[in-house]
Length: 345
Image (tube, rainbow, N blue to C red; front, side, top):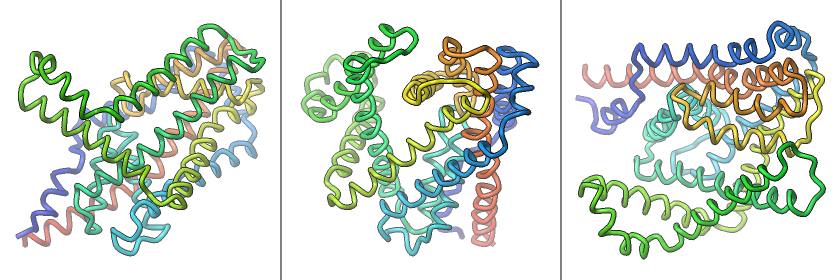
C-alpha cells in the first residue's frame, strides 16, 4: 500500500479540470487581445521589429531570476530536504512557479512546492514555514521599496503622470504596509480584543482557521527576522537582485519599442498593476495586468508603443514561465503518479 505521505502528497497536487485548460488558454490570449485592442496592427508591427539583442538580454535576465530564486530556496532549506543542488532547486522553482502562473490566484504554487518538498522528506508543516519565509523576504523588500518611492516622490523632482494621485497611492500603500507590520507585531493582543466582534460574523471553525493562518504568518515572519545575520542578508540580497532584475523587464520592453519611461515609473507601474491583477479570475492575473500596465504607460508614449511593450513584457515575464515550467511540472507529476502506482501494486 502507498505510504500516507505519498497519498497525501498526491491529493495535495492541484487538480486539473477542463475549466483550468480553458482559463489558461484565455490567459495566453489576453496579452495579444489587449495589444490588438489597444494598439492595433501598428503595435503588432512594433513587436515583430523588436531588437533581437534586447530580447536575448531579457530572456537571460529571466533565466538569472529563476536561478536566484533557486539559490534562495537552497539557502532557506539549509540541507533539511536532503542534498539539493542548484539544478534540483531550479526544477522545484520552475514547477512551483508554473503551477502558480497556471492557476487562478496562484493557488497551485504553494501546494506544488509543499508536495515537491515532501518528496524530499520535508514535512508539510516545515515546508509551509519555508514558503512563508520566502513570502516574508518578498514583503520586506517591497516595504523598503515602497518607503523609498514615497520619500522620492515627495522630496525628489519627479515628472510622473498624475503626480498627486501617485503620491496619494504610494502613501496609502506605505500606510497599509506599516499597519500590516504593526498588526503582526501586536497580533495576539488584537485577536483577544476583537474575539467578540469577529465571533458575530464568523463561525467557530472559520474563526479558528483564520486565527491559525494569521498566527502562522506571524511566526514565519518572526522566524525570518531571527535567522543568522549572514543568512538573512544573503536571502535579502538574492530577493533584491531577483525583483530588481524582474521588474527591469518592462523598462527594457519600453526601450525596445522606441518608448521612453523612467525606470522607477516602470517599477511602480508593475507593482500597482500586479497588485490589481489579484482581482482577475484568470491565471497569472491575465487581462488585469496588461490593462493596468498599458493604462499607466499611455501618458508617456503612443498607444501602439505601449501595447507592444506590454505584449513583449508579458511574453518574457509570464508566458516564458509557463513554457519553461510545464515540462518540469509534468515530469514531477509523472514521477509521483508512477511512484504511487508502484506502491499500490
